[in-house]
Length: 115
View 1 (cartoon, one colour):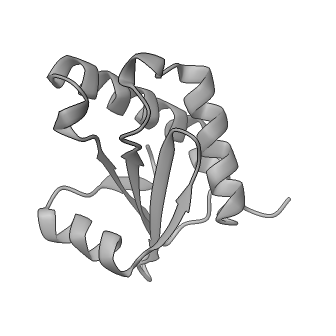
View 2: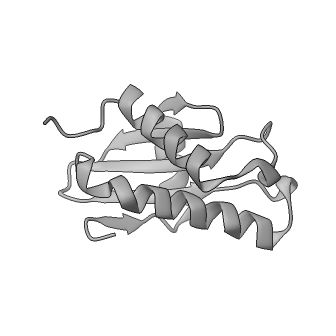
View 3: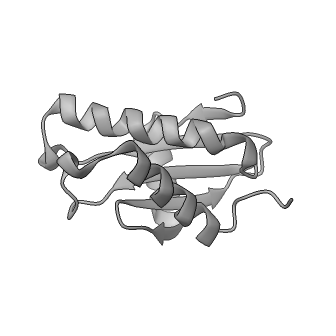
């Protein structure tokens, strides 16, 4: 993730969730907020009610890897928070499905670079 840093603090997540715009797919919802910097900040949240740490971390790895593949085609200057939908079971988390869902949501949010 060359042009992306991670959101780590609770107030950073809250800032994006409260003031950002929401776009939802089948598995994932993203909240996007402009940050007026030259890099993107990425946060990933998976509820502890969905499973134990091993399963939650598996989903985070899938999301991070899917983002990493399309990162160079995404506009910079945004805070992005991925949230795994509670209605979707973690066992349904498949790399291909999540990758397609992330592409669809980013298209909806018009975050892909032109050309």
